[in-house]
Length: 485
Ligand SMILES: Cc1cc2nc3c(=O)[nH]c(=O)nc-3n(C[C@H](O)[C@H](O)[C@H](O)COP(=O)(O)OP(=O)(O)OC[C@H]3O[C@@H](n4cnc5c(N)ncnc54)[C@H](O)[C@@H]3O)c2cc1C
Image (cartoon, rainbow, N blue to C red):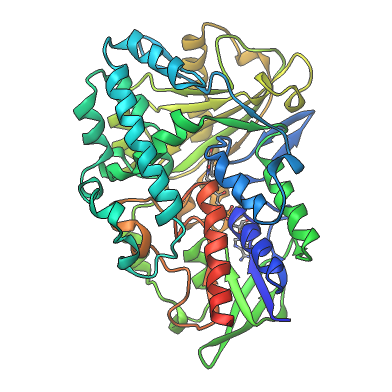
């Protein structure tokens, strides 16, 4: 039985572990933290449950497909609810509520701009076509060659790789609020909408067409499900297990060093941040230099707050976006001229609004996120200053006082991303998907210098987000299988 050692236990590593174990490998996972899940770990405190990272369960078809590949269904592990409404956006002079059906969303668009539902339906129908092509044909390719992108479907849409989502949305809609609403989904890909190819409008279909879901108990239920599935397939999971070195002899890895102990392996697969994984190799075996990483567009980092409130809150939904300040100015502070934003946009979720299991009775679990540029100075003072800014705005926009109802608050920012995940520059969700950082132009799933070394996760193919991480794990497992034949 061939032995595979997997570094990290995020979605991509757990996905790869399951596929490889099913295919007959002897799989061991080594995670530096004390619990599995990577960026999707969980914080439990005083009866409150927080997802530390991801909270939007989009593309339910991809999760379902993952479990189906093992003869299981998501419902064998967790209960899913479609959120209604999906989310609410606060603007400076209005609020937009995104319903759980296209009809409801069209009605809301008409309220904002008469006649806008017609171009919306057309836009979403094209987004659906892109979704089908992307998910069924492109995303499942390992990104080894540009030819993977050359298909009949992509050739007739080639212009969509060179136009941006921003220009496409502006061509069809005038109202700034509708424009921001339609540009929101591609923010998950980590770059500005003006730098994201319009082909990625498939994210709009994921949003309006497939909807926003919630696994009862939170996103960590998915991690638990994958951990349990992996264990049932024979995967050995080791936590508090820091990988210190990937050992190489004659162009092949012989194994890894974990907490000072050598673990002999036939294959090594790293799901830790790619740039960190390569530092575990002697320099001559690294494929990408420091200057390579420096030139890349990274997804933002984040300042996060996990807050326990001693009362139920009003005028908010499960997911809430505060787009009541200048989107462009904040985006500039993230991408063009990295600095702490003056007037940040922010995102808040209160899972306890739809899921009672996530907070004590009569209380609310609150997660606040401000996207910021990676590698910014991160001090307690700055964290507190920004908390004060957003809580004040939150109170004003939602017409209620909440500051004195905070039982506790914990924060997480650049320093924590670096220390806890070995994240490059403290990025929150990997390397952005821009035209020059798509498919074969991303860091490779397979090392070009070490024959039996592979990579997976949000810095490689296909990109950031939970569904892409599930797919990334499968792609890496497929490549190992191919090599082994
Ligand atoms: C705040 C936030 C919000 C997000 N929101 C969403 C969302 O709503 N929806 C969505 O789909 N996606 C979201 N994402 C993105 C999503 O969480 C990630 O894309 C995904 O979890 C990445 O998984 P991964 O396996 O690539 O990496 P990770 O989860 O980072 O896993 C890598 C693992 O490797 C471990 N590791 C690192 N170095 C070592 C070492 N030397 N030895 C051993 N282990 C090591 C780390 O500790 C970590 O556990 C969000 C991310 C963040 C941070």
